[in-house]
Amino acid sequence: MGAMMDGELYVIGRSKETLSYAGRTISPVDVEQTVLAAVPGQLSAAAAVSLPLRDSSEDLVPFLELSRGVDEEATARLADAVRLAVLRDFRIPVPEVYLGRRGSLTRTTSGKVRRLGLAAAHREGTLGRGFRPVVRTSAQPGPVRPGAAGLAAHADAGPAG
Image: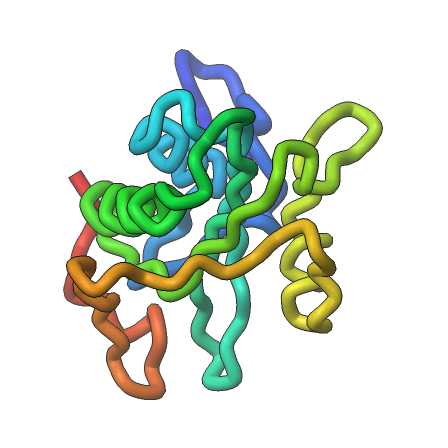
């Protein structure tokens, strides 16, 4: 994946890691920046992963590493803040959020998060003890789930912004 700026082509990510939603292609890095900004100082890292559903649509699932000293009691509120930020900025519902201790995200030798590896581990049920799903608080409304069409049914949502 790349972008043109001032006549120059810049490589900005792997096309296999992009998120497809409502006819839009979204860089996981953009989602990760939104997530980190939503809860400043509470996360050491984030990975936005696209997980295919049975009906050929996709779900966006954030995997978050907690910073040291974050209160475990605050994790549900933190996950809700992430859900709301992604919905606000990208108009994408987030059905699942996973939290892990610092160092839970697997990385390449150059320090890049292995998003495809996370997706495979989730699909195969081999995430291990490093991550746990966070239950939505009762005050947080659930994401709009458009029946069997998944994310693709929100085509009328248009681009965020």
